Amino acid sequence: MMDLRHWIHGESVSARDQGWISVTDPATGQVFARCVAGNSSDIELAVQSAKSAFPAWSQTATAERVAALERFASVVDAHRDELATLESRDGGKPITRAREVEIPRVAENLRFFASALRHEHSDAFTSSPEVIHWTHRRPRGVAGCISPWNLPLYLLSWKIAPALAAGCTVVAKPSEITPATATRFAELSGEAGLPPGVLNIVHGRGSEAGAALVEHPDVPTISFTGGTATGKAIAKACGEQFKRVSLELGGKNPFVVFADADLDQAATEAARAAFSNTGQICLCGSRILVEQSVLPDFQEKLLKATAALRVGDPASEESQIGSMVSEPHYQKVKQAIESAPGTVLCGGGRPADLPERCREGWFLAPTILTDLPETCSTEQEEIFGPVASLRGFVDEADAIRLANATSYGLAASLWTKDLDRAHRLVHRIEAGVIWINAWMIRDLRTPFGGAKQSGLGREGGIESVHFFQEPAGVTLRLGSSS
Image (tube, rainbow, N blue to C red; front, top):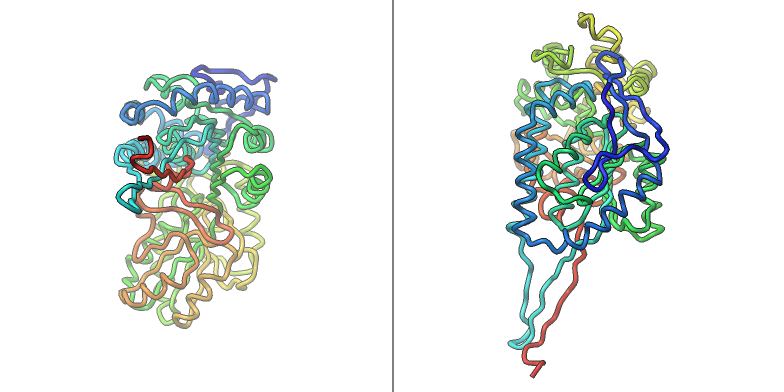
């Protein structure tokens, strides 16, 4: 059994109270590791380590910070297969996804923000021949980064990389459900030569370690990705201390298909958007809205595309969809399906023909529901599983109304050949990320975040680096020293 410990000041550290949390392989239901159960004492130790490392790291030359991040990326590349195996086992995700998508993105995050740092510039203005104004940005101090279980290292590194690039030191709290890759990532930071205290990882439950990190007075910046309810609590706690906070929260995203769209392509992408990573991505298109005149044809194509998805053992190279991440989450999603006041078009239970080793795992077949009331919880609340609804709309106005008919506003995917229409919809859809005739094509230079209850702030691009920095307007009057 693996023992997963904190990483504090460049060393593997046990929890102060010696508590442990079991870590289960969701594909088999078997415990394969345990991680330390950190609390406020462990957070205190990590914050003090980060504080002690901050003066030197924040004053490190830009070229040296760039080189450190690039070395780190190369070390991650060298351990790609090892990290992918851990990620697959920890989260029940297909090994091909972990190896070909998620772990390469970790290295890309590090390299991207190294490049962003290399090309960063400051605005400067002259208001007269003698007066120059410019923006100076300084690192804000210790950054607290809290990440979820669905894309564990992919999202954790997306927070850590810009914080380090900005000159901050970091205390990160990964999900206790999927702690394995964060542990190894921290160890690899040492191999890459990151100075002790610059990156610290503390394991533990959100109610204990996470809350202690958010509330710590020496952590002025918090970046959180996770559920909306937790995000509200974090926003309140940060507000009381005037901390800067970024919240990337849930989504109930519309996938809107007009009659003039390429229906074959749209159906294939709708299935991918709904069920990738077993539907456990905040950007998943969980509400499929189709123009009424083509709904029967589209439904047939969607069911065919969904049936073609291979659900199976995450360790198999053939599997496209793995298990749910944990038994509690499996039960929650299963209950949402069973209580839905509509018609099940496909799925609804465990997939057939699972291999013997996965008989006790937490698998759900891709599920499509229809005939749901617009205001029911199935249509309004984030389920975060392999569950999508299918509904028709009458015209463009109806499509906009339905697309905006939830409290969330994270993402939307619009399918039409009429680019004038697409342009109109971009102005009226309440979402922070909008794709046109596409889904999940990302460029790290673009801002990422949501509207309404999908969050506060933006990640991505130079904005991610600036989030961890404090701007100051500086004015110099030339000749004033003479």
